[in-house]
Length: 415
Image 1 (cartoon, rainbow, N blue to C red):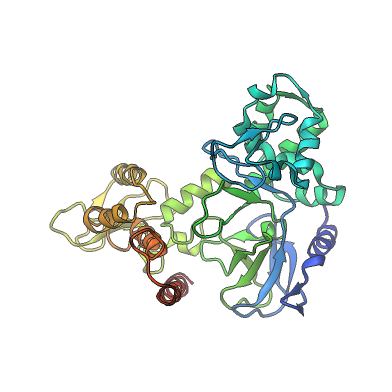
Image 2: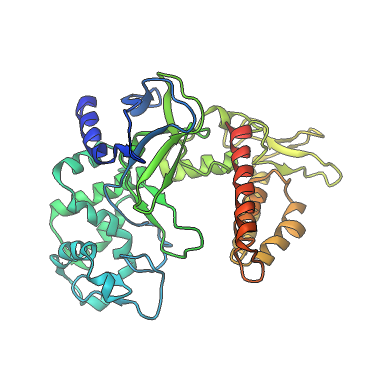
């Protein structure tokens, strides 16, 4: 484990090439220190104002996400499945063109994987599994200092983290040293990686990156920062509200517009902790009622919320009539809503609009995260879908208005 001094020095060197932002030199307004939440965190060394850039990070490694439902696509340009796809005869990675095959990035991947002894013919290699493991495989390209930085991050060491590497041994024979490094990379990625947002309207394979400085930020459901990606996949982290000197700087590991049950369940399954922040402890979530359900009494217009949000087995209570409902009944409703959402074609704007206006609001209040999510999806799709397009000037205006609405919601209700 690196000391704070060693880690701080490596982080400075990691960020060194990215200290110029829009031509302006900036100085660090934060330090790495021990956090009361456990482990290490990032803390302000001076007062920080909304909009201030804290740092610009870049990934140590990046590549396809590792979920079992990963979409099959090109491992270089991330283009999704098509008739022209083929496996590289040397390494078995899926590619879409000779152009992608001839890139330096594929050359690096191919040198590693092609150097392993194959246990089966190339055509029998599971290219989806290989794609899932690819980001961790790329950790073998890191230099010693970069490996130190990766290994200094919190890692999920419990099974099944790293299982994609273990399963690769069915197809390849690689050294114990390489296996150990790739498993450690999987564990670090699963704990710290950020999903890299695709450009709007682009259909491509979902990717992730290990941004080591951003990974040092601890979680809060009301974070005081936001991050964006540029075309070079650099991550810019900015403050979204005033941060006092000495205060910890947070990011949010979950969806900011998710209700408390959804956020806490996601954090428990993926990050292995149950959040107990101020927002999670407030049944109303600062008056947003994002998790609210309609009262089970048909005639009652009230909304139901958890009585003790930090207890997984808590009862729910109607704010209007006071009806109490056992947690198991609430879970059944939430499960049914999830199944209902799973039937939707999110590319069909008319279906989304009908579902929102005619079906879902019969079962949940308009404040519920599902309604908010559908509204956001429609905002993005309207004007961009065939038969629903508007001219460029109006599109720019609407985009500005909708961005303002989202910004106002985030700042007024959640911050």
